[in-house]
Image (tube, rainbow, N blue to C red; front, side):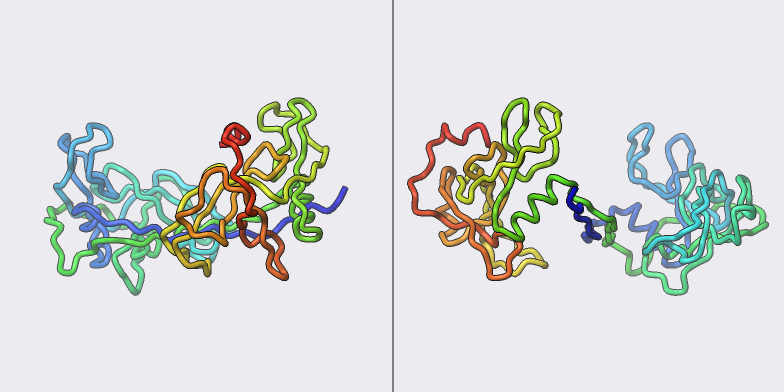
Length: 314
């Protein structure tokens, strides 16, 4: 069996959101070493605060000042911290019910080992040296034996309040395309051929192949060369420029049914004004000198395909 490809893959994007008055007060308070909760109509104090009661859906706005000490309600040991986690040495993930709060806050506990952590232990917030109005203003929790502090009312008003946050979402993993897609990728890269696989039951040809028929659920292994030309089945016009693509907008991305395939793949359409791309347009791949896959597809000059020839591939 040929070697199956694998490679590290990173999926990341910055998620930007605005804050309402409750979340704004909570994060601004952290910047000032103040932890705020929100009172519900039945007297519970929620930390972190939310703008609507998760039980009754009532709108919430009455902020209260809770303690910086609390009690661990449950925990799990993390022996191998990952990039971006609160601490770079082994630590415990803990749910801490801060004094005068009725719900628990998730964060890291700095502890020498799992034997030093237990449910019910008293802990205190360790503040970050530089605080910007984010949950990371709490650097972590640490062991503490002080008694609970008295609750106080807080109006939640601060100078220069935090009004929005940017959360960097990132996922690191190793991706393997499997046997079928490895063959597909190598055929594209080495021979500039598009190779699919035929289902032994329904006889449909899938490109890119997945190693199994999505309709019948049976394994596929018979290789079938398709294309290189194909038909545009559907398309969209892209008007927002991606940071990592050196392509001027607007441009067209389309689903293309290669000749002989029973599944459309996607590709960029070039060599034609974006407002002239249409369903049924016949296209062919365009390769760059060292390209591992087609750079884009351009019109072949053939008459448009009849709708009935590709309607099942929409």
